[in-house]
Image (cartoon, rainbow, N blue to C red):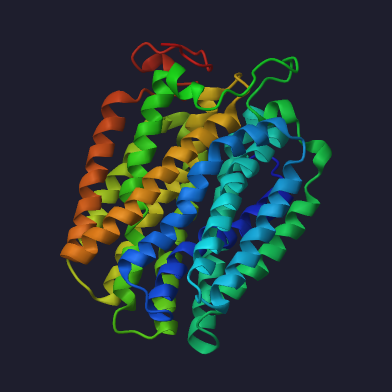
Length: 417
């Protein structure tokens, strides 16, 4: 890329791929196959973590903006996720243990994502943020591929619940990477979206107020909520379909195959966005991610063949590979110079959590009433609505392209209503 990358950040993102993203799909398959939970109960378990994230996300962003102990927060959250993964495989009796573990994971995830983004921005500054974030995302997806492939091998040839122990082991690797990040290299003013020349009281984070003062940020918030409402439940539903008629080990193996198929596509998508987002703009790339969701939802309903479903799941890599990168770039564009990058990120992720929560809850109920195909078609229709909202209402935010998009200016800060 021609830009010097921070290697400890790459390592942290590699291990975070399995630590943060790997648990949800496995939890759905494990509760169904090993503990024989019903889809509605599985949806509630998945929703428990999302609800916890919703409640904590906005104050988490504000805390990350304010604190100089970002590495310590990353380490603590990593430990919580590793321990919770082990709790899940020990027993589901009483069931509140599962819900408690999910709530703990939800709280930890509320801090992890914004903290990694903040440390990245604080180390690189705005000029190198795109390149480092692109590499971070690629290494994150590579970690997910590694974890899912190894998890599948463990499920087939050793222990069905080996994937959860693997998550705990990956958490140890993430802790080692966090320890290697130089705390003195983090500019905490830049890390919250402020400018290096600002004073200590300038650019103070405002949380949810940012959503109501900037039309672009409000439009973006609505768009990403709809994206996650349409997307969040797709893989858990497909994982449950793959588990029907299979033992726990094979169910987890097929789910791991779904993850690998998607993550292999996410790596080049993250690199593509890093190379082209400043040239093509954020908007066309984000619209491409939206367009994949209804296609994927429709294709899921055409066959129940396990290998076919794994193949369709690879399309998830196109959508989420773009989303993970462009989300951060658009948010950095909208909050640059305001000092509220992490607070705004927390506010948006809170709303995203609401979308994911209702996605799992509502789709679980629809599946129980009308079957998996109906639930997947419902999610596909929601994705179409989201694409229309973003396409019609969201302007381009890339600083180099703003003059060509409806007369938008080069002002990277907040546009007041």
